[in-house]
Length: 224
Image (cartoon, rainbow, N blue to C red):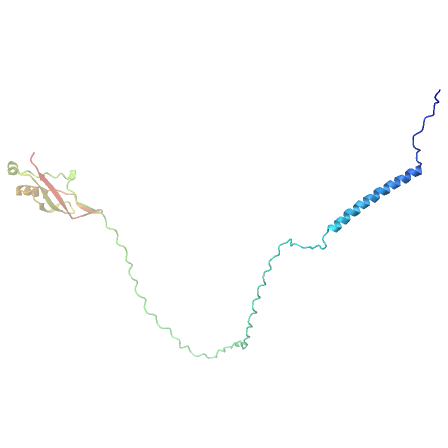
């Protein structure tokens, strides 16, 4: 038996028209808007429900308050100064002196002055004393001879030192010769006196002036 060939079945749905598509699109958009509005409404309502019934607002001070210093007391008013009424000062009027035509002679007499005292002499300071130079007997140019050693004293072995005090004149001569310290032997002392009486001296001087003075002359007797 021959099988008959059937035409293919068209299983596709018929395409909606343009009007139907627009209507479906509008419905979908409306549903999305409705769902979004519902979600938004529920979220806002939940937030409004969660809010506390009252809200307290407190303002915190941001700037530290400045301390207000108490006002300083005002100084007391000055005491009123009592006014003193002084009498007006009367200026004296100048008086004109009129000279008389015949003035009386003046009786004013000048007393005589006492005599001036004599001038006092001005004391002058004394001049410093001039230095004094002692007399000398040992100058080479005087050529004074040595005392002679007594022969008896030489044989007897007498030795010693005699000091003679000589007063010398301003001319350099021996005015007086005396024994200041003996040698212990009279012969030696006498030999020294005899020799020094003939000596010449360089006189002492005060500045440039020759003066009288005294000098000690030592004479030593020694056996060699």
